[in-house]
Amino acid sequence: MIEIKGVSHRFGGIKALDDVSLDIGEGEFCALLGPSGCGKTTLLRILAGFETPDAGTVTLDGEDLLRVPPHRRPVNLMFQSFAIFPHMSVERNVAYGLERERLPRREIRERVDAALATVGLPTYARRRPHQLSGGQRQRVALARAIVKRPRLLLLDEPLSALDKQVRVKMQLELKRLQNEVGITFLVVTHDQEEAMSLADRIAVMNAGRIEQTDAPVELYERPRTAFVAGFVGANNLFPGPDGITAVRPERIRIGDGGGDGDGGGEGVRLTGTVVDVSFHGGTSHLAVRVPALDRPVLVAVQGPSRVVSGERVSLAWPPEAAVRIPAGIPVGPIEGEEP
Image 1: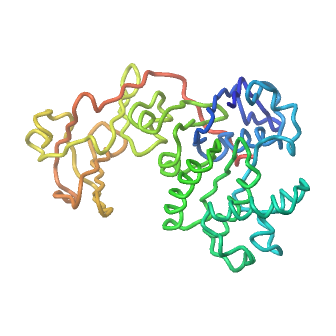
Image 2: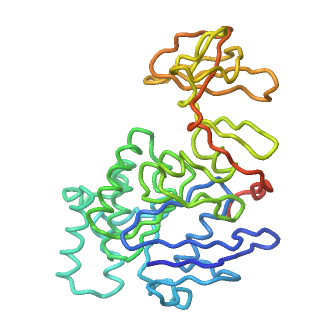
Image 3: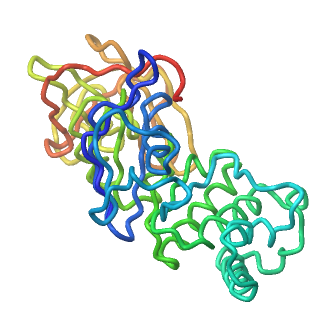
């Protein structure tokens, strides 16, 4: 549905986007994931019509989207701050865009009622924003975004202002909402867990470029660059003469310092000393100092750890757990915050 080709954009001497290309399918939930300053919000603003790229094209169903003024694009942007009007009731906030289009009152009422029902706020129509919780205010912003029935809904860090418990609940709500209303979603986030739980595909951005676009499982298990391997989830990166070997902490088996690891005869790969153990409810995280490596090896085990700090251990993993990433030119982050 959306085709982005060779898009580049500068802010003064900073190259915010560098030859970015991305396709987004009809009804897809796509995420732009990356650190601050990587260019993801700039790309979102170009789609919304708030920025014009220096080079490249953006098409919607084959038509040039860049020629369409922002208010005429079938695109809606939900801001990180929600940006709902404090002096208006919930229903007036949701109806505002439809009223600006001068739609018949009956149609506005029907669409507002349907949108509030979709986000679970049908009984909150007369309340003001200050009478709502953070999660409820976010739902109002979502209702206002979907009531205009955009082809593409852009969400800029939509859950960052919420506490963890509400954020997890709203992640499920967003996915349910997207499936129910059938709108194409593009979400910008620096939260890996959020992107992995929400998106059908994730585009990982760094220094104004897209380093890899894949489904969440493929992205996690088969990173193609050192940046993706290190940014998406915890990882152990072992340098070698021809590149880097990446091994996820949960794939490493731990045993005593004198024998094989406990993972079914995989053989000892490394031996080291446990320098830290932390319990995270369902799993324990261990850091193991290994000679000749400049940082500890991270290991994740189910439940409480059987080993303690200071203990000598062996580490092993199956060959299929190791991902080889060819040597390449490292790409560093852009200085400063994202425009």
